[in-house]
Length: 97
Image: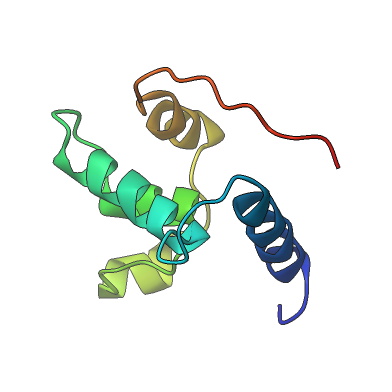
């Protein structure tokens, strides 16, 4: 959806990034890549289809079974994928507008 929620979120992220004086090479997409890498490299055996769905990607492996027979993914599976993410805790001081 061009110009929809994704574009609005990207603009909000850019404004926050500017306020925090983060370098230009840090993009929202770089966070998405980090999440993808962490999920694909952990010991849990999540299906690629679940990870792709959490990240908002089309299935990275378009098998005949995926295209024709997968109508939905159980929300519990997506919840497990999201809850498996662990990051070091840090404090971020976000300046007021």
